[in-house]
Length: 193
Image (cartoon, rainbow, N blue to C red; front, side):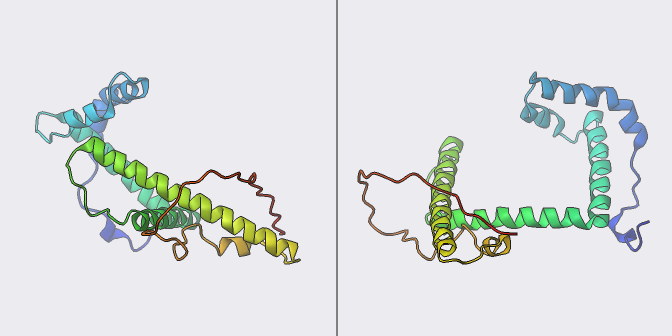
């Protein structure tokens, strides 16, 4: 079924006997994680030692090779799966580039404190999401104006727009906080098929 892919595979075969021997222990680890009895990070610390005595580590490594190989074979043979993965990757990359643009001081993290770093990342994502919300609201208003003028809106038209626009945003400007009455948001745009 698969042609011309011999170079993808190593000569080492999967050690099925090792997986079969440690399968009950591997299932027990999985059940412990699922039940919340043990944290995945604790298991990874214990299994992360590639000691010759740690046979469970080697059994999980072999199982990982099987899962990875099955996924690669499915990825190679399924065009729709490749398209879904590519689309999701493009969306993630778009958001990451946008968030990096929004956080213009991202190369300066003063302390090597994990909690502070997580806070910075969360605040950055909050700002990026607020800007995306603003962009979506502005695009919706523009669509509503075009619709009111009689233009036929199609899903293809909407797909050409992205909420990751930056040309209108002033990162270094002065911002005022003021109380004002905001109109309710209306997303009632009709796209015709």
